[in-house]
Length: 83
Length: 363
Image (tube, rainbow over all chains, first blue to last red; front, side, top):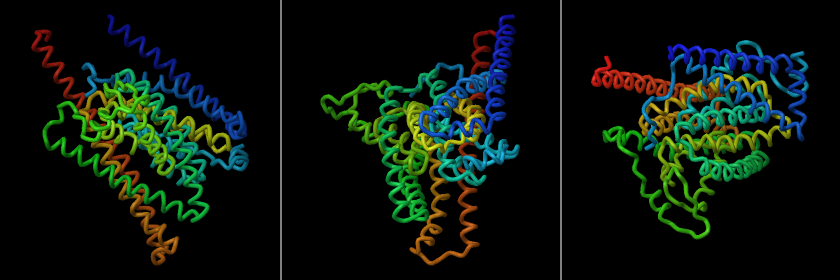
């Protein structure tokens, strides 16, 4: 029962993070011209690629983590001992 | 609309094949980076250039995917207790200075000797550093494997013991990865060298990780995880610098990031299944294969500079293709060793857990 609830929760998280990730990529690629022009203006506009990369790393990073978890690929269950 | 993008900022148009290609190369690069802390960049930049992306845009876009990737990897490995944030930040800031100085040297060489001179310098740096450091790392990994002591705790080498024994007042700092205090006067030049290498051959980790292991005494798994912090600091600074000149193609960067974040999660998880010498084995193997790849290009650039007799166009084409193929092979061989090690580690763990369950009468 508890295992099934956990599985449901991780599937829901995967769907939400997946949709958010797809939304980000769609937004970027459906506005290629505007994005490319704005992001290459230099000066303070140089912060735009940095901010974009950080947002993608958070959203898409969460999705890729959830993706492997949903597939059952996880870190070793043994206590990680750094030698 | 696509043509407008291409002409306005000199960026390439993207079709489905290009998108899948970048995503795939990003995945393999991410897998290797998640495991050894760096790598991948040496293939990603030429891979983008092979699509017609101008060199500087390729370098800039590669850097813009590298720092968010490193951030995700560092966070993941921090959860496993493998990251020394303080060491990573100090190394990273010194590396940033190294990147700026390295880029300045590159510009000077390019101005004096042209493109061929600059390429020869990069290739020679690859060959010399990878031969010395890569050869040493691989030899050490093989020695550990042959000794049958792969399960034992890594020992601190003579050089690292000496570094840890030196006390220079007002410069000493405690690092948790060492469980010792060392002088930052040792970490700063090592970080600087990492940055200089990053500016020259795009993979600072080939100096960063071995120097943390052999010169400071950081365990291999922690060194490779801490390198991700270094890559984050260095990559973010580098991206900002390139973005000021409008050189970052965010579309390319995010496509590669799209694939590499799948890879980096897997590579980071992989470190929890393997023995520490595997980090050295993968890193040393990649370094030595890349050394062969770059070595093949040395006669091409020497011929262009008139230092040796002119090579025929056919010979140049064969050398270039072989060099690129070997470089891609280096990345894939590294990825194969990692995936195999993860698979074996997971299998061994599930067998062990099953045996324990039987022993405790749970089954």
